[in-house]
Amino acid sequence: MNTAAIVDASIEQWIREQKTKTEMVPLIAESCLGWPYVWGGYGQYDTSKNRQSYANRSSCPEGESAVIIKKCQILNGSKSSCAGCQYYPGDKVRFFDCRGFTRWVFQQLGITIYGAGATSQYNTDSNWTEKGEIANMPDVICCVFMKDGKTMSHTGIHVGGGNIIHCSGTVKRGKITDKGWSHYAIPKGMDGTVPEDKPTLRIGSTGPYVVECQNDLIQLGYDLSPYGADGKYGKTTSARVKDFQSTHTDQNGNNLVADGICGSKTWWALDNAIDPPAPGPQPTTLYTVIVPHLTEEQANALQAQYPDAEKRKEG
Image (tube, rainbow, N blue to C red; front, side):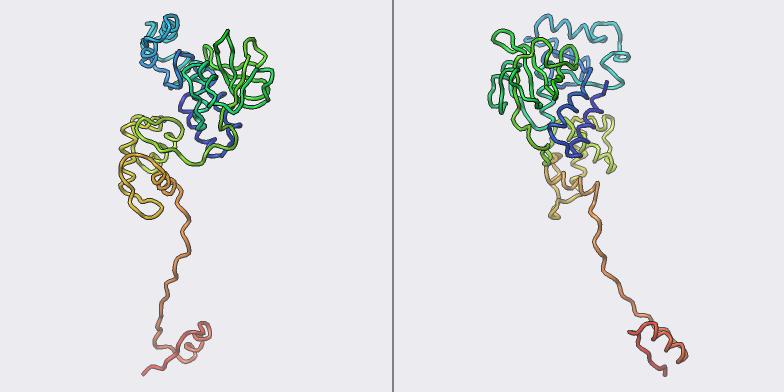
């Protein structure tokens, strides 16, 4: 099972490689295999504190609350740490419910799927360029749904070729022929590549662009301990961005505003600091050399070697 840090770094790399969205959705979805289901989750770190918070929500069904507690060895009292937990491969992973998983995956590509649940997602027409019954689904990257009566009871991602990745118990693989899949919907914005423009980052931002910013700062010698490149834009990251801004300029040579917000000008300065442009040709410095006390033969030999040299008699 991958850690959250590994997945965030992978997403960052795929963006750098300019993979298309069609290529990236299956890669992102598959990289999350094994991550746990938590009712209401949409990509939060799977910690006992976050689990307790979701279990305590007044809107959380009693049965779901019990499952959230039961599957955490700290909350259920079986152990005092995360060591050995099936959801703790040496570092944090993320948790989702079904609609939170689809929302999070597409959100990494700048695509927002609105709706608090599978039904509201499907019924929000502005989310989709096309939707309909599963029998009419083209072989494209899209969301799929299970309909139970008048509502959608579950959702997942069709990653091509009839293969599904969805979150039920854990993030897992499935087939479009599995019982229950009834409808599909193609998200708006699935054409083309991931936008090249990097988002503005501030306190509260998360995701692969935050990891990129943090890695750039670390490479430039800015201390982000104790958390490092954790994908969370907190006070420490904001403070180090301010430090960077205070000593760097934008592409027009103007001093950056040291506000701790990583916008387009700061992104440019970071990129320029990490990979500065090759220097242009340097001007040639010329010198005049006077060599005294030469014989006429020696002077003639030098003048033959350097035709622009000037020969004068001494005295």
